[in-house]
Image 1 (cartoon, rainbow, N blue to C red):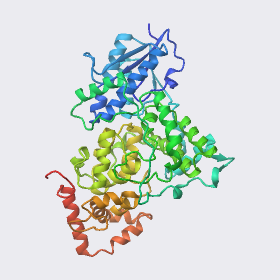
Image 2 (image 1 turned 90 degrees about the vertical axis):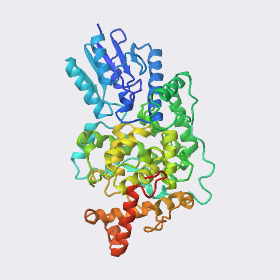
Image 3 (image 1 turned 90 degrees about the horizontal axis):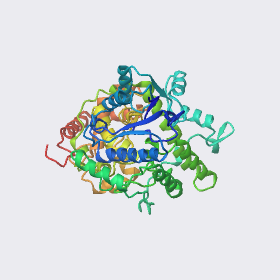
Image 4 (image 1 turned 30 degrees about the horizontal axis):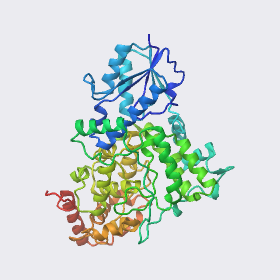
Length: 518
């Protein structure tokens, strides 16, 4: 006679979840399931599969240690039915709970699937707010309803005021809300210096078992697990947070937009996966960063830039996702329909910056945000790749990819597929931007010249930038923030425009940029 079956999804690994409110071990039970569908509905990389499975198994151990009754299905059990819906339906038939309790999922597809199972079984489904976030979706919707455009800045300011973060009364600490101008430095000729290493955690027996399983069952999936060392428990996640605050936060802001060849980690936090699995709470992350400023350990510009990513951007993209789905996933404002180049799955490109970013991604399931937005994302935008294919790639390859955060970042920021709902203009640039932000070494070792837009040595970014302006000239001319760039296009002669178009066509065909025969 089971009262409540509490469903815990793979990205809800926090014991203080609202799903556990009122839990009574005498009459309630927890349900978790590993299923192949979550790794195959998009072709997930080995690193992404492994971090979810390893973290789930360790959380199951934490539940058992807390004496919470648990029904747990492993992916390699012979009777595993392969999908969350099928496994949950079987659990309902077997356990006959009077109700299902669920903390609001982060994936629209999963939410609809669980809803359908509960409806078919004619069992009450109690979906509870996710306290992991500062704001509810309802609060975001109310904020958005009052405005013609839904921009990050004003939502961020309202949350700063509401929660008293970096505030002095009604005014922001330091007299300004935004310190972007202090946070856009590139590395000098000497490079990033002696960067503190990322926090790594040697896989224990449970994680080693997962690695072996993934390497066997998902052998054809992209990436490698040779370097797998991500935090998969709350204790490890807290260690990662502390290492970032102590070792890298003081220089995080200054170099958050900088690039350097062969440097995957730099001064970034590397805690996004732990946050999105809910091994960390954003409030403790923000509190740790603010404390670093208050004790003089880290400058205000660095701390504000980091806080804005957590308290601002993370909350904002979640609000966009849940107020715009499901139609948001199909948006394609630029009518882009090119296929994603095959070398996004291998790194086999002769463009040095792209090869570096993709090889890091496949090796670690990670690249930092500028590599995502202004290297892999920028190239796909300029090339005209169908946004849904880019979305599938990002959701596949990154360990921190949960759809509520990945989809708006990809479709809205990287691909401008939402037509400006999130970003006031497409984030486009030539190869000179990438060179300026610290990739002079990339460009020096590359066969292409970022200063050239035509000819055999023309950087594909630079060629495609001018081609993008030409293809979308009418749309961009109507955007005040793009008018100057469109005017620059008018300075090109007809012959120069034809040369750009011909070179762009060669790039799209794969005759330029690929290391493999077309």
